[in-house]
View 1 (cartoon, rainbow, N blue to C red):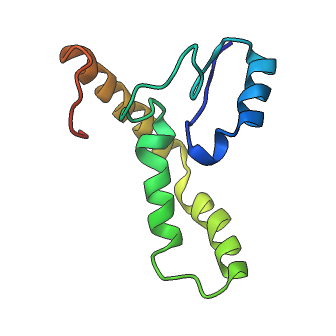
View 2 (view 1 turned 180 degrees about the horizontal axis):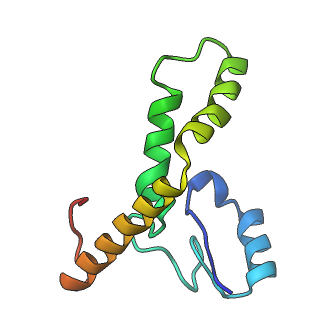
View 3 (view 1 turned 60 degrees about the horizontal axis):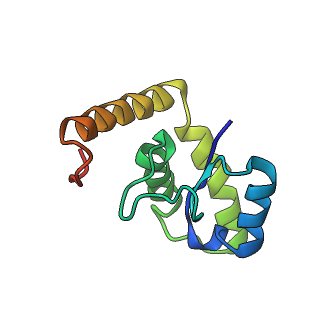
Length: 112
C-alpha cells in the first residue's frame, strides 16, 4: 500500500515524515527524498480538485462571527455538500485531468 501525503507545509514536520516512514517505509509520496511530489503540480486526488474549494466557499459565504460558529459550519457544509453525486463528479473530473496530462506528456497545463 502507498500513502500520498498532501504535502502541506504544516503537515510536513520532521516528526510527521518520520512517522510516515515508520508506517509506510519508502511507500509514501510527499516531502520525502525517495518519492517527492512534483513541483507546482496539483495533487491527484478528487478531493483536492473538487471538494475543498466548494466546502471553503460554503463555510466562508458569510464571515463566521465566532469560533464556535465556524466549528458548526464545517460539519454542516459537509452534510450539505458531500453526496454520492459530488464524489462521482470529482472522480470524473480527476479522470479527465489525468487523460489530459497523458496527452500532453506530463507538461504543466491550466486547470480544466
